[in-house]
Image (cartoon, one colour):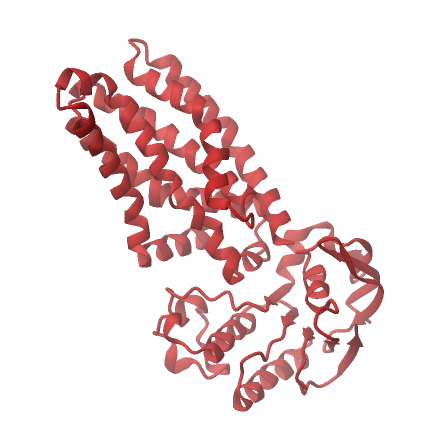
Length: 214
Length: 189
């Protein structure tokens, strides 16, 4: 399992342009809002948490297409399934690699972006804190969707259609944690959702991989 | 004493039944060569034995237990070479196969530091073969192992196959070209 994660990290380092693309998309998409809405600090400050959350969500979807797609095309998927790891172990390793290469950089970048959008400084730590379970959930659910759509003809279109509706509760509680005066409840809700997704999503991913491996 | 025994195997590829009532057995040190026209089910049979495609019927035994009951355990007995090389172009040969002896066995030592995208098709095939050699698995499942190899490389491949067989290993391989293996039976599909 550790070997697989290290290998994935090494591959994403070699394809660093692909890895950086998601992060750049995140920065650019969030930067567009002040241009469209005008630079009024009052307007931006109120919608900043929403912007950062939605942009992070969309940016994290970008690399999902290749998460299993590349392995499926070059035959590596067979080797992964025959690596002696159970299929859910492969799913878990892939989700972990996706979070380390996409979720973690987004998390680091979210703070500066929020400041740029004139979000009050006292809310920024809360935003990053809410994005931590948020990006983890996104990696788990996204990996599941990537495995389900693997081999489908329009996988790149299908995947967001599967992932985004599943992410709606995370989005609601995530932005609520930032804006609500009582952030503990939505944060606990996010943590609970993460605890459910952590065992279930890799199981689903594994089952989907076995089916597309046939 | 046969280690791998197939009893009345059947498998689907999509909606089509590609083979049924297939019986064979492989003993330690023996090889089984699969022959048949394109589409006869050679690759499907290999995928079935690997546990990648579920059995539609019959039983596959390892010793006297059901081989496919526990797929991760079964996977550890297998070294797999598919018809695709599964070589990541961004990784070097040494990163793909960290075992220098296996690289040397297929005359790839000089290319160890090169990323795989600089290797030729035949060299990538040899790299995929080296990964099989590097594994300690007793059963090698090879789908057209000599695809894209020149005569010298085929001789190298035959040498490592023979060494694996002499060490008590087993090989099930599909092939179109003649493959010179000791102790090989032929299964016509």
